[in-house]
Structure formats: C-alpha cells, structure tokens
Length: 94
Image 1 (cartoon, rainbow, N blue to C red):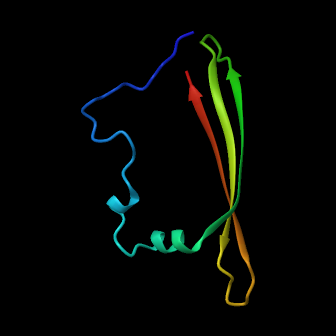
Image 2: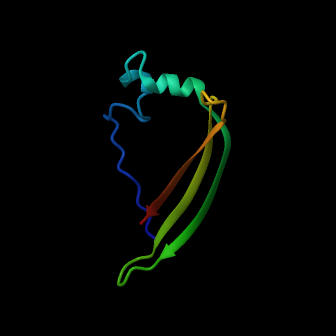
C-alpha cells in the first residue's frame, strides 16, 4: 500500500504553530475568556472508514466528534451557564 507524507522543508519558519501571544495584542478578549472559563467535561469519539473510490486506491478516513462543556461564571441573575462546544472533522490518508 502506498503511504504519502507531507513534504519536509527544512527551511520552513517553524514546525509548530506560533503561540497566540505572538499575534494577539495584550489585553485581547481571548485572554479574558481563557481566564474566566473552565472546562467541565470533554469527550471524543473516533472511528476509521475505508473508502474505495471507483478505479482508485482505498482511502482511509479518520472521523471524529469532540464535545467540550464550557463553564462560564454565573450570569447576573445567578444562573449557571454551561455551554457545549462541538467539533466534527474528517482526516483523510491517501
């Protein structure tokens, strides 16, 4: 089976994405939210599908669903705010 990798470029600027502090200004709203919001719950489901395109090699797809429950400080009326954040994605290996 053929395996494909992303090309390696030793002259690239960095291997990992930059830190948010490199491109977010001091006092940005993101820092405030990160400071006050807690994570109550995290769960994820992963599965792999093999897809056989017509006349081609099989493709392997990693499917996943991730759910995070964010816990915000109580609202002015005292109500607790639990907010779900759901991510769904497909990664394909050819």
